[in-house]
Every structure is written in C-alpha cells, then in structure tokens.
Image: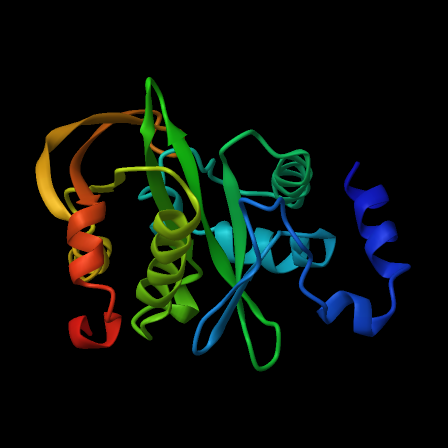
Length: 211
C-alpha cells in the first residue's frame, strides 16, 4: 500500500503537487494569513511520518500510535481520502512554500448532531509560532459558517499547557475533566473538556483582538 501511494504521488507534475486538493463541499480548502489547510495526500507521507514519530506529540494525542511509521502515515492518508460523513481531516501547510506542518480536523460528536469536536497537532519544529491558533481559527470559522451546529468541543491533556492556551485563545470555555484512552500511553489519561458556542463565536469573530 505504501509503495503504491508513493508511486502515484510521484507521477504527478510539480504544479499538481503544490495545488491544494479539494475536499467535500462541507470540507473546503481553507486559507489563512500564513496557512493553507487542505486534504492530506501522498506527498505528505514522508513529512507526516517524520513529524508524527515523536513521543512528545503522540502522548498528547489520543489516537496516534508510537512509534509512528510510514505505513501509519500512508494508512492515515488513505482513510482521509475515503472520508466519513461530517468529518473533515486537513493537512496544515504553509501558504508560501507548501511545507507540511501537522494535521487538524473536525469530527461529529457521538450522539449530538449539533456539536463537532476540534483536534490538531503540529510537528515539534513548528511549535510556539502561532500556527495551531491560526489553523484552529480557520476551522472554527468554517464550521460555524457552513454547518448547522451550535457547539464546538475541544479536549486536551491536563499536562498540555500549550494546547490549553490555544483552546482558550479561541474563546472556548472550560466544561469539566474526564478520562480518555491514549494509544501511545496504552491506557486512560486525564483530560480537560472545553466548549465554544455559536453566540460566543459571533462575538469574537475578530480573531486579531484575541491574539
């Protein structure tokens, strides 16, 4: 599978590789000041496996295995291409050179059609540069503008101070604590749960005032 994916990517022209791939109509390509959020594709596999193979990331993300191999990356790209109803998976890339930085996405909340959950991770070389907040803003704006939802949820490990800061800068409010399973940790870990409602988002749409 991995070799087939890589070969199919190598058959594309350089212009096609740089061109953002369109997602479903409810998961459009997103542009922000510095970033392009687009569908993951085969050319991301090497960078994805390199950046994701980091315990500092995997232990903070519920469903990321560690070690993270090229096969894991190829499987992830394939699942993203197949898609799931209501779920959007994005590669976070730089707008100036197309460099792959990490991933983010939205997925339906089980049992609550009016809520989606926000998730994201960045490769460690790209931390502390505001990319996570910028990507989250783009996802949140898209979700509230084109989807009939009332809330967006976000969760982070209680030890993940940087992620909590991103969540709070986006206007989310603390809701409570709980436990979730972690593939990398091999068990349950404590997390904090935050929520952003449509009314709050409408009052905070000028993201620049929150940075």
